[in-house]
Length: 93
Image 1 (cartoon, rainbow, N blue to C red):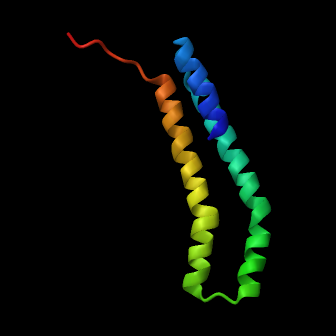
Image 2 (image 1 turned 90 degrees about the vertical axis):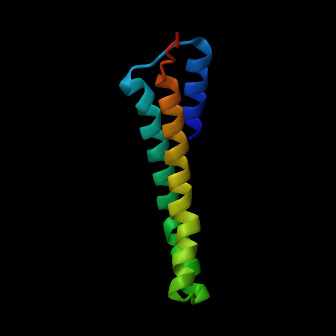
């Protein structure tokens, strides 16, 4: 999210339109970064769930808010910036 946003904002400000790989490469990097971060956090989160003896719905909510939603937010925002950087405005006459 951070990498693709920074690169896209610079490209938009400079008026450059990147190619497909140049626009979507930072999105893949953001996905890899968040996936690695969540992989590191996976075991501590599971340990906390086991120690707390959460019921099924509690476990689902914890995993939803600590794993699923952060991943989805990063992917969506990165995708939005990739699309913005490739956007071509047409002049309406």
